[in-house]
Image 1 (cartoon, helix red, strand yellow):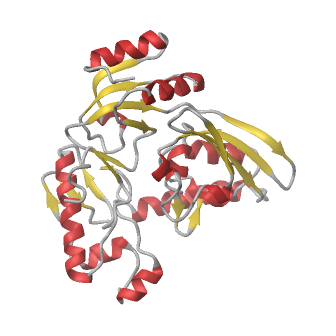
Image 2 (cartoon, helix red, strand yellow):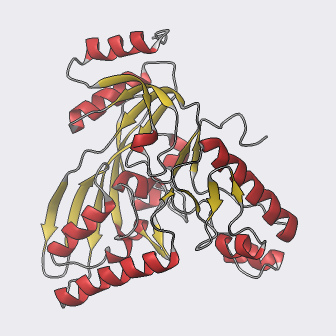
Image 3 (cartoon, rainbow, N blue to C red):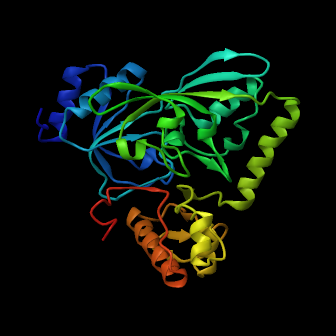
Length: 328
């Protein structure tokens, strides 16, 4: 069908087809992101159940408009002009034990589940495999989309199956070999499918729960020591280079933060956006920045690192609403 002409008519379309859906128009997206920045969505849908989420996705695909799935709003920078289309907020949590023995635990988690809650759940069930991911903000769906990592540990290592819905409304079950998982990469970045749920297989039983809880505290302390706190952030801005690429270019490190630091960019500021003095791969603000400040500072960092080292940094953060300018 052709797209309704206005946010009001789009809202009427959704509520006619599914009266129980909560639909808002011209809703600012800043409150739904960790960065607390971002202009309005033409239409924001807030499903409360898994069937409602599927319905919202199916109906959104019938419109000739962009569709954005937003979880906890980490790892995204939404432009001040917002998103001209339909935003579906997926914060629906559900976790189920599929099988459990002394040696193995299989958990199915819905994509809107916070990753930290999945870690807590698995620990309560007696398995410690996912502890390194405890401090990573975001949902299970976001973690799969970006193959979340802690140092060299990738979440994809523990995934045995993912259920997703394509743009035609067909559901698919993907095995690990079909997920195209690599560092900061998955098939979903290209396919645009809606991730519904994932199954995780854990094989590291807890020997001493007190030690495991202490390990969680250690991860929290490490995060507080090495990453900025008390400010608004979206996580790391840039992907690390591959070690092979860094070697080929003769770089002193493959870590983006190290290169940004050595390019003299710590503390560099545009408007209210600042390259963190604590960790150079973070750009932060204290409530006085705009998304445009962030975008301009990202471009400045890329230019300065390329000028010094001859390499092109690639954003890890997803830029939304900047499509016409990303390659400009």
